[in-house]
Image (cartoon, rainbow, N blue to C red; front, side, top):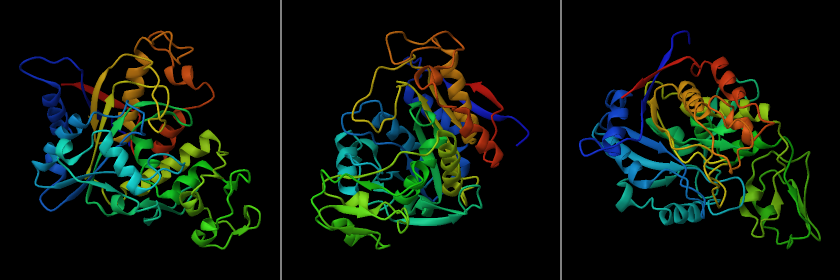
Length: 369
C-alpha cells in the first residue's frame, strides 16, 4: 500500500457535553462502521475477556457502546474470543464463558451474546488458504471465519513474545484454533511431565493421530504428532506441556499469516478499535496485571490494522514512562518502551511482515477528533 492510512484518535478528556461513550461512537462513525455493516450481517466483535484475576481488559461498559453502534447499522453483533492453548480459566468454552461473565461481560451489561468461536475445546475450525511463507493454509476459529464482518477491540499493551499486543496479535493469535496457536508457538510436539501424569488415557482417546502411548505415564511420539493440541485440552491434570520454543521473529510471522486467514473474505467489512489505556507490561492472559508503564493515552480507530498498531506504538513510545514499574529503560519521551520491558524482542517484525503480506501500511495520518 503506497498511500498513508488514516487513524482516528480521541483523547480521554470528557465533559458534560461529550463523554467517553460519545467519543467511542464518533470514532466508529469516522472509521465508517455504518458503511461496512448492514441488516442481516453477523458481526464478530473480537476482544479479550481477561483471565481470572486480571483487571486490565477493556471495560464491559465501553464494549456495550461499540455494540450499540453496530446495532444501529441493522447488523447483529456477538462478542467472541477463542479458548487458550495453555491451561487456565479460559481453556475450554464452559470455563471461558464463566470467566467472561465474572469479569463483567454479561448480556445485561454488554447487550450482545457471547460465543466462544472455536468450540468446546478449541478444535472447531475453518481452514483458509493463504499461500504464506510458513503456512499454505491456516486454522481459524469457525465462528470468526463464518462471520460476515469483524470489529476488532484491542487493549494495547506489552507482550513477552511479540513486544506489544495490538490488533495484529488480537486476531492473529486470538482467532486461531488450538492447532493454529500451537503451530505459532512451537515447532515440536508437546511433552508430558511424568511426575504429574495419572496415566488415565484421556489423551490417547483424544489424539487423532494415535501418537500417544500410556505406560507408567503418557509418552507423545514427535514423529507421529500432527500438532493439533487436543491432548493439551483434555488432560485433567494439566501435565501435557507446550514447548515454547519458536523464535520471536518466526512467531510474529506465523501470527501475521493467521491474521491474514482470519480477515480473508471480509475485505471492506473490518473495523479496528484500540484502547491505549492501562498499558501493562504483559499479556492479559495472566491471572494478574502489573502496574501500567505509561499513563492512559486515548482511543484509536482505523480500517488498517498495521497503521493502528503503528500509531498505538508511536503514542506509547512518545509518552513519558513511569519509573518504579517493569519498564527498565526508555523512560524518556521517544524511548522504546517495548524493548524497555522486553529487550530481546524486535516488535517491529510483525509490522514489517504484515506490510510485506499486503495487509496494511506503517505510514499513517493521525486525525484527532
